[in-house]
Amino acid sequence: METLPGALAALAASAQFVTWYAYPSATRPGKTDKVPTLWHSGAPCNAHDAANWTDAATAIATQHLADRGYGSGVGFVFTDADPFFCADVDGAHDGSAWSPLALELVARFPGAAVEVSHSGRGLHII
Image 1 (tube, rainbow, N blue to C red):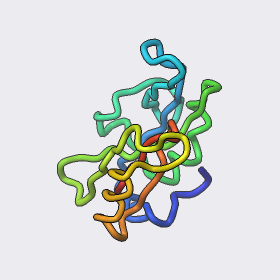
Image 2 (image 1 turned 30 degrees about the horizontal axis):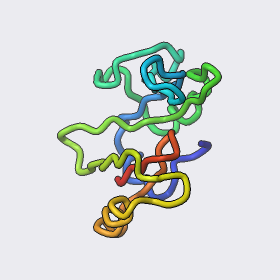
Image 3 (image 1 turned 180 degrees about the horizontal axis):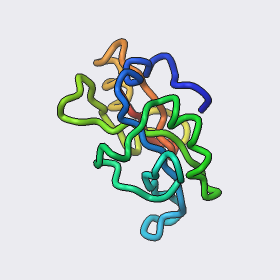
Image 4 (image 1 turned 90 degrees about the vertical axis):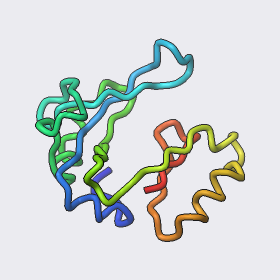
């Protein structure tokens, strides 16, 4: 990612971003797990500690520091104080089509940002 997608532009007003890296899951064969990282070093961190957050542009520019060869990226940390929410729909794609539930949820939130999860099988509705 080189810029925050336009549909997520409202999140950019909050400096609540972390970077992350993916690695092969020890408990879920064929899947990856994600670890939040410090934007300035790529070292693992607690994503719920606000001291580890940064702005969107900085997270995007430094996400490569987190990469361990299985992918890296940028995440937004949602808090109770945010006017946003994220519906995380796991296992919503069977390899050929989105599930009826996933399609219904997307339809219920017109204007929401929708992204495909790192696995390619889920959706995030923001």
